Length: 490
Image (cartoon, rainbow, N blue to C red; front, side):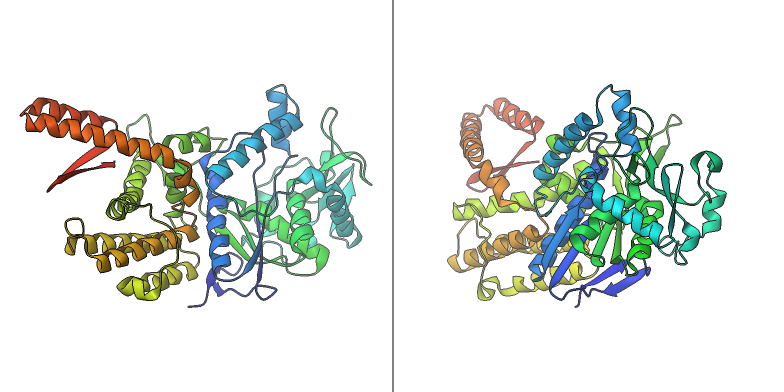
């Protein structure tokens, strides 16, 4: 099956054909770093990290850019509110953003361009639009004239008349000719950061920053432009208008938009309500706190377990269910490790070793080729895990190991880890970093299990039950089996 991607511009799935055969260039709108990152900020990076990994797996050479908006109205307002500088705020929250990316294993981004480092390109793009008659200067501001662009609204489907009726603007004070016109360059007020330009001191508008940086690093026409559904209008609509008006070429061939994060809360009436997670609403969940509480693998799995175009609903119960679902894999890896007395590796098994498990790779690829359906791909991983567990049970491998069956199980688990790795799951680095802690935990648990066994042997069942119940309180479950007691985390 050929790779097909849903294109917001055409409103349908299309066969993927990169501008340059064998190479893919992607741009994802990054954060405006005026506050700490919340979980909604991580949806796009996690999804596009998995997309890049899959494209590389498919043999493409991929360049992926994520911008940092380090000058914008919200930054200026936040710096004033906290009595600090814009630069100090930028450095603080950029460092937080980078740490969260690192924790989640998002390490495939090639460049993080900052708006303030590209003023020359931004000013040049503004001047090109003025020279071509698509923009005009007024009172130190530069405005894009939407009426000059015949295609304006093609991404969102919104007509200029609809936009005008919903806008409020003091045309005389701002120098705008049409309420729907949007700013390319803003004259600055006293005390605000500013840069020299042909139109006086000022700073760029939000939309022009992305166009200038995307075209600098990816060219006038590139393959994929991504972002949240809330960016379709006005941000991405304006990016298309200004970029294509300046170059006369298509800006991005495919526009991918991920669903927004929603949070379910109980209202004062006692009824549950679902609303968009947003800083303006005050219902955001810190990305770092979530990682610290559940672990990066659980958070990453949570964000990939829903198709990227669907909204992600966040509740404590959903995270608890996600943790249980992910535990299917960790328990399987621990089970096979006990069988083989060695950690499960990610080496590539042969097709002969895989036997009946070899079809799962093809099914995994089929899911991913259908608009990067990570939810379907994860479902396939669960199918594979279930099949491996069933083989272990049916062959009674834990009671009497059969070398031939054991080799097939080990090969299947290696394949499972390899496929999960394409999505950035089951990271070897994370398990390797905690190997010594794992060995200590194993030794301590064996000691506790031995003490419980002695209590039962001495008919001290109250003490044995207290040990089991105490372990359950800290998330450890014991499984009594013929001749042995196993343990696992809940």
